[in-house]
Length: 206
Image (cartoon, rainbow, N blue to C red; front, top):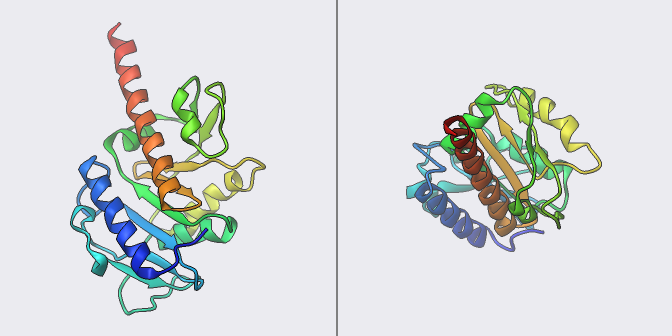
C-alpha cells in the first residue's frame, strides 16, 4: 500500500513526528520515518531535524537506491527502511522510535524479547489472540547499516517475520501497510516496553 502523493506522505510524517516527540519517543534529533510513494520513490525524513518541530521541508524524496531526488540529505538510516521495502512489497511505511524504555530493554536483554500473555499483542498485524507469543529481535548497533541489515535479515526471512525489531542501545523499528498501521505497531511495542520495565521493577520490590 502506498501514499498517493508526496504532499500527503509529508503531512503524515510531520504528524507522526510531533506525536512521537510528545510521547518522549523522539528526543533530540533521533528517530526517522518513511513512506512508500506511488511513483516508486520514498518520502523520508531529512537528516538532523528535531521531530517535534518537523515541517514538510524536513521531508524529502529518495529513489529505491537511497539517492536524493531533491538535493536534501536523508537520514543515515534510510538504508534500513529501504531494506524493509525491498523485502516486503506490502510495506507502505517504516517508523523508528527512540524511547527510554525500549532502549533500556534492548541493553538489558541478552537475547531477543519474547512477549507473552499480553492482550495488546493483538495490535500487531495478523495476531488474533493474547495467547500468541511475539518475539521481537534485538540486534547489535553499528554505524555501518549493512551490518544491521545482515543481522536482521534471518529474522525477516522467517515464514512469520516479526512486526518490529530493536537495535541494542538505539531504538525500535516497526512497519506496516500504511503509516497508520506502522504507528499502531510502534505504539503497541512502546507500551509493551514500558509495561515490561514497570513489571520488572515491581517484581524486584515485591
